[in-house]
Image 1: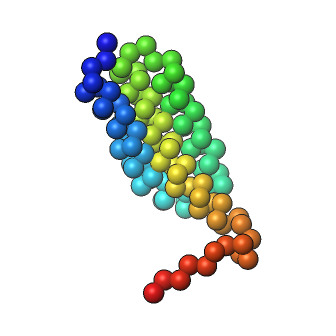
Image 2: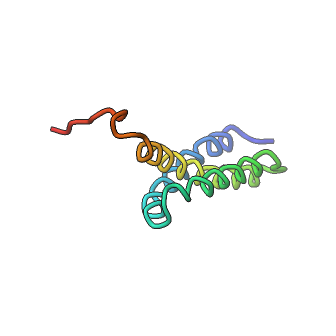
Length: 98
């Protein structure tokens, strides 16, 4: 049986680990390329989702949340930047920085 404290840690762990994934994604995507990093990011999230779905214990579920969090962090940083890079210049909204 999972106690409420374990539920809170499980829920919050994905957010904390996704921060780590998003910080690591900048250099990795610059080094390998954004286009080629989208598939590993999605695959990492998929592996984490499988671990969470098949988890027989709370520790197995926690491991799935950590792996999924890394994938979420990568995907949340790489996909929007890649989408912006491939869109035509005339469809982008100009942003003026004062």
